[in-house]
Image (cartoon, rainbow, N blue to C red):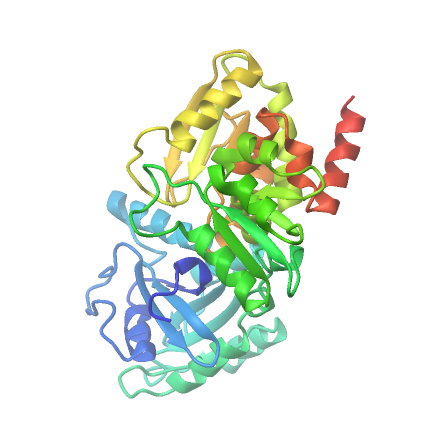
Length: 412
């Protein structure tokens, strides 16, 4: 569990003003010196992450943040980092000290509720000044769980632990499948895994590993091949596979080598559904047809790596999309948690499958794009569209395919 990817962990964010004891609370909860503790306000600067196992729930990621009331130019940068954490928080913990509940706490609560994030409130340092009954009644009336703690004495820490377990969101506990629901128990999926310069030596990339595990967990079988062995692999089977899944970069060859009656899609499209909202990104792909020379495209990648060779986000997608549009486009690239505040300059946003993230962060980005009125799509979707195999890549997802066909028909 210690090595479980971040994307599979429940993200629990601690928010509050400076010097309310967020770091002390996290240290007490984890029983480790995760964050530096000091009487000096503003000791925590960048977000501090601590992965651990919270039984019986499973793997979680605690995130300690800088005080939301930090001041000055540097303080404003810290606050911006704290606000970024909101977008990837599955369960929010608002920490208030000595019974105080002010506009700062209300603002944090509003930001969490705006994102539909489950929230609990901790009144820390309750040995100095417990919260008033009126404050507790107001929060209870809004159905917000409250816990009183004293980190120095260890009071309330077990209560907080239980409240966190009780308020874990259902979409984390009952997470959707990656691919197994498209295959079924006892059935076969063929996974096409190109081995190129960007493939980690001696390893498979995360979406491939997670797809294999998802199939095995649900009693499905899988056959893993490189793209040049696909045709022979399918011919060697006594029964056709239920699904072929490929790396999006090999879409054209895999489409040609997969018999038409066998459904086919890509890992990236699977993760568009698993980590976000497939229908939203399918509709966003239609914006490709309205692109024209000079338009600005934002390409967003969740993980950070140094691109080499024919990088998919910096070389292949720009090349395929430019060929499709028939004019020069301007591509802007961002990585990790960086994402522009102002999305209005962009005609389209193309996002990776976000395999390194939890689903909450990807959903937050989809929400921001919808509010800004900027279409967003996914690596695999835009590749399939620009190569002319979009409908085939969507056939395993009938609802998304039907939505695309109806929308495309209205567009005509």
